Length: 69
Image 1 (cartoon, rainbow, N blue to C red):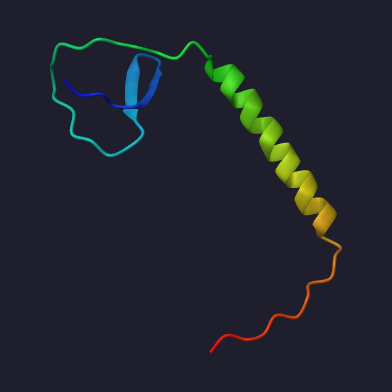
Image 2: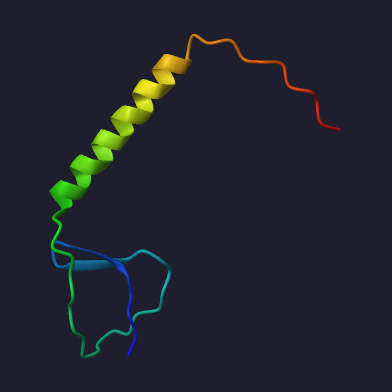
């Protein structure tokens, strides 16, 4: 028995890592109760925080760093 982590969307399974899946095999589907929309909202909120932080830092002065050899 193997477990493969990925996404199921529109009846198609996409693994998160490169794996070799058999053409036909008996399987058991176990899925996370969080919907894609909930995950998307979390990602959008995180990206907004990242964007805001980048905007805040955009006008700042960069300190001088010593050159590496």
